[in-house]
Length: 387
Image (cartoon, rainbow, N blue to C red):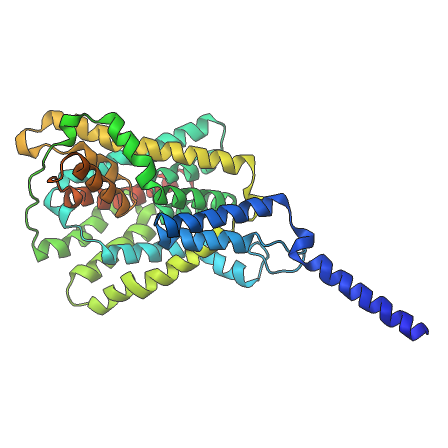
């Protein structure tokens, strides 16, 4: 009889432990909210086709990261030594972003920028969003290191934001990474109203002259000279800029096609999956749903708007010194942010809307790829005086 009582007690105790270890027993309202947000990300990626390569991994990662479990179970992304935690090391220690830049370099054609170097200035002007957001964050009382990490969202460059934040403010990685990738996906929503507000109908109809043909020699020399010029000025940007220009040299050399294909294909796909998924999983409600995170998300939107406006306004001012066919359509000013090729596509679609014969895509790619370089240089500048 005593044996039966002990067995019954053991079984009841075991059942109780199983129940207490389930997600149903440990769920909090924050988990539900973040799971819903993750589902929304997946919906927007599939239904609206807003950057699905980013939003699907991030959205699903959000769901995984917010499955509730009993404390001490050691399955979450924040617990040292777990599988998710090890995969997240690539984000936490900044390994993934340079590899992404290698792939971006291998798939980027800098011909538009080489043929019209003054478009580089538009990419530089758009980085004002980074420093503007940095100043605003400081004004709101954020420490300098956190303000620098928040400001980088304005470059609309997720890998750069992760790289800078992993060095300056690792505790803000989840909030800043999700903000940066969210605004990259929302480029078609955020930028057009700003572009319409700041341009006149006459300016939107400007036709730009056809870019000149670029030689193979120029394409090969560009990544070498680009690396030397940028990294000698900002050595702190070397991990990103070095990999970006290396990837581009692999593409343009003509003798390393297999390496270029790997960098821009399987490798960047694998890294994007791991980066997006682990960034999403890092948004555990207990760490992510805070007043600071929500405020960072708001500042990120503001910095992105500043960057877009700065690019458009720079072109308008620049046009005062240009004549005839040398004038630049201000609609490509938005492409100075680093969201490649989404922001260039927005420039093109806006141009076609006002004139079906005005093809801006090749012109917009100039400041767009310049924005990739510009955001990495801006990151290096921020790191040089804050790290």
